[in-house]
Amino acid sequence: MWRSEYGIPVRNLWVLLAYASDLAVFLDRVDVGLDDAAELPDVLARLLIEAVERRLQRNLSRGYESRQAIISRVRGRIDWLETLTGMQLERGRIACRFEEQTFDTPRNRYVRAALVAMAAGVRNKKVGSDCRRLAKRLHLLGVGTIRPTRRELSRDQIASHQSDDRLMVSVARIALDLVLPNEASGSVASSRLSRDEALLRSIFEKAVAGFYKHEFHGRDGWKVHPQSWMDWDVISSSTGAHALLPRMKPDLKLDKGIERRIVMDTKFTNVLTPRMHGGDSFKSEHIYQLYAYLRSQADRKTDPLSRIAEGILLYPSVDRDLDEFVIVQGQKIRFATVDLMQPATALLNRLRSLLETPLEQATKREPED
Image 1 (tube, one colour):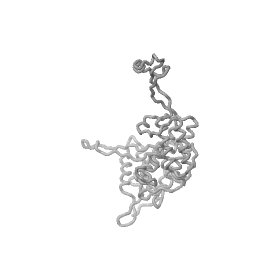
Image 2 (cartoon, helix red, strand yellow):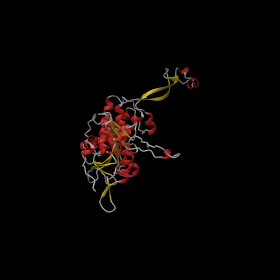
Image 3 (cartoon, helix red, strand yellow):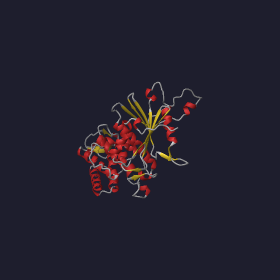
Image 4 (cartoon, helix red, strand yellow):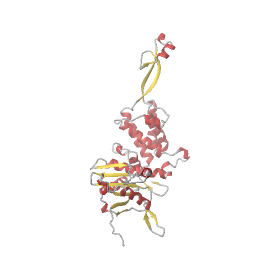
């Protein structure tokens, strides 16, 4: 179990990482024993082993590298300067520049680096041994040991039909960037995830967006728009004021045809905050933010869904689960939590139910006098 710096328990961190990093599209294609109690590094290592072995069975993808050599026949382009100044023709040889296929590509070196790192970072001895075995196989194929830079990786574009390569690189990126211990910290027991609350917050936000995009986008009329910008519906303004207004960007906007719109914001914190004189309350700044998202777009003539939009503030559970709603000036706002300690199936079903269960089915209370 993982626990954030501020006490938020996370049991199935691998689920969040899978959806945050677009790995969910691959989870139904591999069988690596993704059980609820598995250690995250071991799970990712097994997933990477499966992906690399599958790719090796179908031949590892190759790239091209530029080479220059003096050979006995023309290959590629002739380097006339080198050929003539070196008097190569007299020796029956010619200097050429050409492209040669190689397995030593940035993506393959990146995957090899992840295998080596994971071999040292997992607890399961067999998993570590398999990582070392595959790293050695890549070495024998000519894959180098130097980890590529981000710039090199960005240049090594993965084609749409190379989904196996995309899987390998995605798992390798998680392993190298998120999961394995940070060597600079000097502690093999800690990791960036356990120490960095901001990173956990980002993973939670991206995982929720990734889940709805993977599970709902394009199905039953749903369209999922993560991090889409909203503008203020300004009728008039003083000179320069409109340009100075901050733009709004909720975590998610979900539209279902012309029937429904949900504006969702995720908050990796406790849903409640203590009142000064006892008791708890929702966090006012979160309500103001979501209310601004809803009211700033309301009744736009060019956007009929703006009239019926509802908002959801989604939090991880801390000590209790909660699902409440209010309707203020016609705007529906729901406060919901998801228990990150649940088994994976229950966790995903909870996220799914937020869209499939109408708002009015949450516990309904009449306002007090």
